[in-house]
Image 1 (cartoon, rainbow, N blue to C red):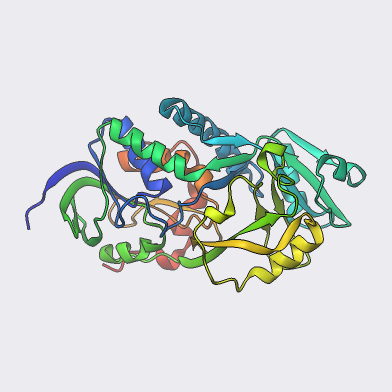
Image 2: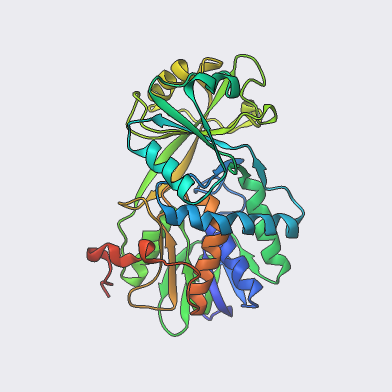
Length: 373
C-alpha cells in the first residue's frame, strides 16, 4: 500500500481532546490530519451529549489553577466560532462539615481565590429552594462554574480546525501504527504518514498503543447518566438560576454525586435500558430533591476511561518520542479540553509545556513506563 499523504501531525480520535489538539496544531500552521473511526457525529465515546459541568472546585490545586486558562480558551473559541458554549450557573458543593472531601474542596477554592459563596444551614433553603441539605453538611457555591454545551462545542472546534485548513477523515478505523521517524498509520480508508502522532482515542487507547508495544493501566467503565422529571416544571431549571451541584460523601453511597439543572426535554434523548445503578440516586433524590419524580425519565450511557489515581495521562511515548498520548480522563476531562489540546500540541511540537505535567506522566505507573518492543 502506498501512503496517501504526509502530514506534520496525525491525531487519532476526534473527541474533545483530539479535536482541540488538532485545532491547536493547525493554529501553529502544522499540516494536521484528524482521524476518527466512527462517522461523525457519534455517541460511542466520552465526548457526546448536550451538557457537561465546568468548574474550578477540585481537591487538587493544580486542576483549579489549570481551569483559569481553560475558561479563557473556551471564551476564545466562543468568540471565534460565534457560538455560545458556556452558561454560568454556579456549582453548589455539599458535604459533611467534618468529612474529608468537602473541606478539601472548600479550602482549595479559598486558597486559589475563586469567587465563592458559603451558605449557612439556616439560610440554605432561602437561596436553594427545593433541595434538602443533609444535617451536618456544609454548602459552598463556586460562582464561576456552569454548563458547557458539549455537542455544540465539539462541532465548533472541529469547524474552526477545518477553517484553518485541517483535514478530518471520519469512518477511518486504525488497523496498524508503525513507529519511526515518520509514523505510518494504516486505516480502513487509507495509509497516512506524519512526523508526529497524537493518540487521543479514549476507550480505544490501549488497543492502539498495543501496536507500539505499550499498555497503560486504563480501565473502561460504562457510566449511566440519568435524567429526572420535575414534579413542577421549572423547579430545577437553568433559567430559574438553579445551579449545577456536587454532593460529597452522602450516606447513600461511596461516590460523589454530580448533577446539572434541567436544560432540555428528556423525552428527546436517546433511551437506555440498563438502570442497575439507579437505586443509590433514587434514594438520594427522594431525600434531598423532593421536587423530582424519583424514577429516572431517561438513561444514557457514557464511556469513562479511568486511571488508577483518576488523573490524566499527558505524555510522550516512553520509547517513541514523536508519539504523544492523551488518555485516562477519568470522567472529568471535558472541561479541560481546550487546555489539554494546547498541552498535547506543545508536547508534539517539542515545546516546553505551559504547566508542570509531572502529575500526568506515564512514569507514575512504573510497571507501564517501558515499552515491550
